[in-house]
Image (cartoon, rainbow, N blue to C red; front, side, top):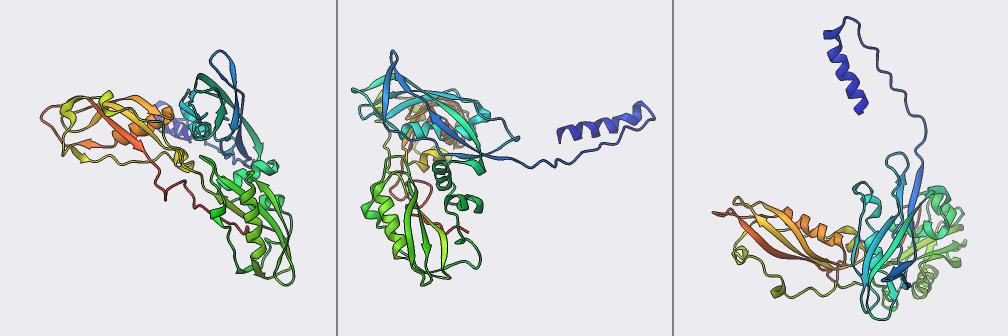
Length: 374
């Protein structure tokens, strides 16, 4: 499009320079199909301090994402640096990520926070490298396809469902559920920062009863797998017999609390900034989506100045946990706010932005989900 506008600009200027009209612009249609790929990340080993290895106790990988070849270049490997607390949970996570790659790296730091490592007490100077892998959508291994499907809320295409469970269950006319059962969520524990899921496959006999029930793909939660199979077994359907039916169930994550925030007296700012009625436009907390999706809490301490007309600027992140991305999100929250006009500007103000998950907001999806794929 930029090239087209450039040529049109020359065409407008051309007649003033010569009587010969510019050549006509011919744009050949791009007949090549767009190749769809899925980007997923593999985690390398973790080393801390003087090269001491830290073994994962709970390894959480970033969720796969759809990648459209040709629209942007594939991201390069990303190295994150962090410390590990007494519970083995990473914090103080930082990393240099190119702005154009942020769309595909937004779950790296949350996934690292959701992991745990075996250490003797705390550890510092740790690092891990995530390496990207691109695979054609039609050739994804089953486990990655299942993880990708849950990340897409089970909205994957017919050919993907056919690879998960071949059969005629998705043909029209669709089967009609007469009785639908659900897992007993009370029996299923949540994992901190990580979704659990199970794909249950089954056939339907001529009487509408589910048969040949089996777990096809799983996140490894035996309780969820068992409850998913039990729910499928109790269902009843009209429109059988069919083969290759699938139900998908997922369980939301347990909240990961933020590291302890320092006392307010440790970070005192300009007392002139402590105005009772100061907001012309109050800060609106926008929770960073990847952290909300994993129920990860965080906080940031910010220093900033205020112009006489109320605009907030010169924002500096003094501290942010569990990652630098929380500091970026907190800066955006404060930047969008506005003080009421003052006679003079203010400098050296300090405030805190806290991201906290309420019990009814753990994640971006409901606690349970099922898909009768079409």
